[in-house]
Length: 529
Image (cartoon, rainbow, N blue to C red; front, top):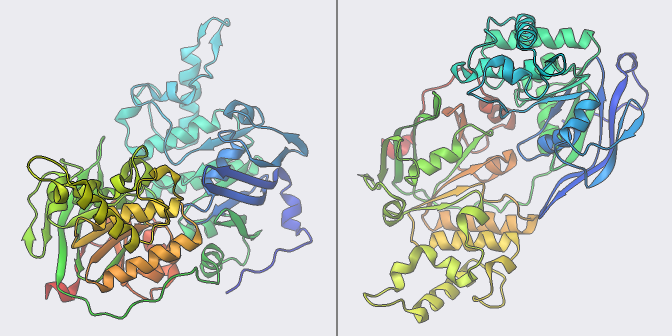
């Protein structure tokens, strides 16, 4: 279904909700990344303005621009018809803009009231903080939010859902005319969600413009008045919510044309090469980053691990690589349990990781291409007394050619390469260890479309050679097109399993946090039969 074109004439509903803030021609460029591309966006007052898109689509960047956290590279913002420039969060707050980030910005050792009025405390005689007034105003806010939370309670003693309510109270205490809510229900119970929705309805009546960001599509349809969809930093759909359904949203999110994915190379899967059983990683402050995860990968299989930010995907890969000693559970390689407690031992057993942040975790920027690509395999070129530079150089050149790294000399600095070629070096470094299982965390992040196509083709080729691949991605199209099987994570647990050819809407629905979870036991049935 193709998104319907936007109406040119304002509807009666649109006339009832005047535009309070406009953004025109907004672009935001980071080094190596264009986060926003000529974006036009309106916030209507007395309405819920839904903003949706995949991870990395540009939603958070756009909200940071509106909240004064990030400046625009190009473009203009107007509030109530007058041009404004937000250099700081205080500038945005002075124009009536409040934001509740997904990642809570609170102080666990301070009280609830101190957090709500941080840096905005009312004073007594202009000298000292009027603590009685702070406490009373906080109590009124908690009552308004239908929460029985003592203002003097230490914030760190509250569960995460209650802390989310405190963050919302903090924004309401600023008398914001525009309130941005970034994944506001991610940590709330069903009862707390209903309370939040009642508060939103109350704010709408008061004329407050709400910007609502969420991956829960059914929730968006229920609460939204207008919807804007972002994909790759561009607006792909913008209209009143009336008549919008989940297929329309999904179509606008992922588009009608596929990206340049390489075709699958026909091959048979081998025996089980890797198995994880009941992996659990506790979270500081209670709960779990990874909770009772079990899965298996066969030789030659590409298993996609999809989920939203905070689902626990990267943490699961880190557990496999022994980067979290506090994790529990068991891992097996070709049927034999992996008891090694350190990264080098896991590599020796045939596990290799291509990390998400290649510059921070995958490469040493002051080293050459040759030194980087052989860094995990130096034992292959080392005798009792020295390192054979000749053997190292020959091996490095072999993998540079194998990975088609575009570089004039292996001794050139790694920093001289493009992002795509740097990623090829990271993959080459992993392959040089001779892995049976290749872990890839966001393998195509931050590289151009041509480099992506090369990486995808290489993944297909490696799988056809018999290597098992477990890759994490936030790109829905990517996981649908590349995976022989898809596992979806939410809230640290497995929430769904799909074969190749799965529907995008089903995968997105499974990734939504807070729904009933299936037990985290997803084994390849053929591998364990």
